[in-house]
Length: 261
Length: 269
Image (cartoon, rainbow over all chains, first blue to last red; front, side, top):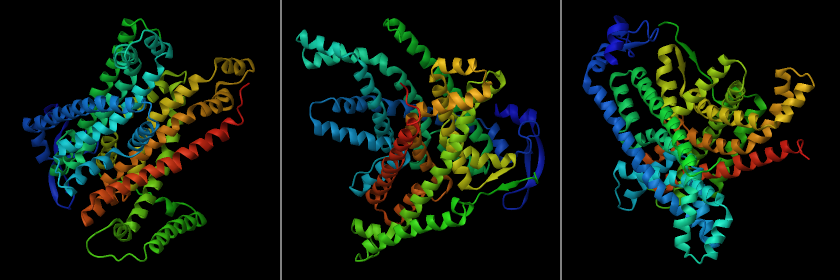
């Protein structure tokens, strides 16, 4: 891709550097109009090491997505069940906690988790802190999805369980939860894509995901155009098909379970 | 290059009119002096020993940051509402061209993350001859991003207006434009308001990212304060609480009030 751009659309030109010196650069007349790239960057573009770095970072991003989502799914279920207990106080506390997490920015939460630990003698690595923060943040969102889905299971099901004298655990895990899963799928799919789009925030504490590497490359060569555009395109190329795929899976599960609407 | 035009919007307080500016600055300085009066007995030493000392030392910065965040949020709301209206209505247009332009905008901004868009607008647009200061770049990026989400909300609300309303307007021989303006859109506004309440909280959270391109908002100030004091729990805890209070005491109640105000005229029998 880089080779294609530099070979077919570029020519060497001159321009003023950002500190006022005349430098040689590569011009992209057809592709970007008046966009410029230093020769150093063009050389780096042709260097396969660069693309591996950016795509290696894509791997890190995906690891972050799946780790964070795994934490969020489990903790989210705990938070949702915490709001279904008989204890009014517990319900209230969990409710406020979820509301608090949902209405404060993820970046600040990441900072909070990362920097508060050392004050009490617990030093967390950027990865651990980032996963805790992003996992908790999305756990709050997923708990709302679960809560809605659990509430949408007809009340008659719970009553039937009582009538059949099933234990509380068995009626929840055997009867209520399986029926809530297809109802929760659309929301869960949306937040899977949401967590993918929020992983760049991990760059603020130095997790080497895509955006972190992209800004590092950008600041090294003082050229942000190409890397930022490529990162944007990677995001688009992954999130749009995933969204389409999730719609298909959703429809399949609904059909499989014989649910109309 | 040559034609690098610098679009430099001054902060809200400079573009707004005189009396509004003085009221705005008055509120800001009033809060600061109230804080100073409350904490007048606290001695400020080099190290931060307790929370009051922390507030006395960094309270001004926190107030400044909170107001910049509010400005950014307000300007981003304006951008988002305009974009959402244009492209949400465009999404249900009969013209294929307008519909596909709207879909492209929505899918593009919903498909990539806000940080990427923010950095793209701030770092990449200069290569295309548009140089933005951090301040306008911040609220434009946040506004465009949330505008795309809002456009989907607008589209859903327009499609949720009962079919009979379209038919009645059609029977009264209204043009498509008049029908949208007089009949459909006002009813759609009432339907979409609850969803906008959530979106505005998302928007407020989004403005926390503008600190990354050095807009001096709450998040930016929190990093500065942390690097000066190394008091993590005080700094980031306070910032989190301020964001929470803005969301819960400012955005939620005003959306509630707007809802009751607008649905008053549209009582369905």
